[in-house]
Image (cartoon, rainbow, N blue to C red):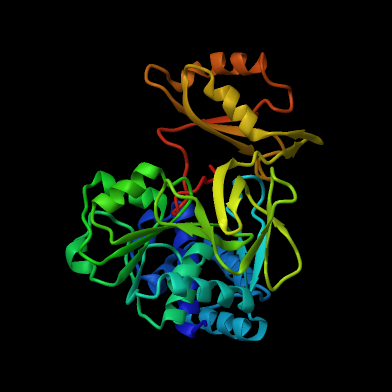
Length: 379
């Protein structure tokens, strides 16, 4: 399933996303093909972090390398030996969590997806392959379909009329598709689109069809599970892939398991199961975090924050270990308010939240922090 060139691309994506995350080179994620140059000019401490992440991904003890090629050779040898990859959750509800995916699991998913995308002739990748979603659709699936992969920068202003062709599967993510729609870009005939469900608005799906997409596939899944279900219209329920079995013993939080494995898994969302192979999303589960030994719910704190007239949007999460062990808040203000109004916001919260729920730090910005895939990011 995995060639040495695939491994090199995955490591290059680790380097690019790490450089962008540290704000060293935000354009790095938009410049495929500049990996060797990026490797040689990255600050040592950032390169060290990237090397650790690559080691975690491929399952070997971290070591230093003098070139990207040597690093890719070592990682490929680890893949051949281990036949597994370890992807990490985004960390939006706490520390990033390692999730091991074996070759059998990855093959099962790509085989299931291949039946859904059997008419695809080429995969056009706009997402990093070092994350599970990108790996599944831009490495595993093309291998199963035996089709080429073209890697492009996620810029909606490109000359798509000439870059895309009939039979392409364009692999993007919600925030990219939102910009695509706003730019009034059209698809050439015969181009399919795939997106994750990281809050992809129904109106965006509709607009992609209006822009000429031959078919839009919205994929539901998680790093912990892999792909679970799909749909082609926003108003439809998701259809569960055949390699999953669903249980409704607990109707509030149904569980799923791969048919080839004994263990059941809880879904990351509240869902209903209108049929044996159908799934309807009802909303994210409010995962609790521990603050000084007390269980608190960041979503409840967000709800209280949003009830203040100054707050347009917000995110609340647990601090990183290096920051402390309390909650922190990111706030987008409504017009007419500035960060100088923090005092009145704090007073408002103090009357409505317990001491453990009260955020210890506040950050302001013009929009909520998002990752390259349009998911909530740290700040």
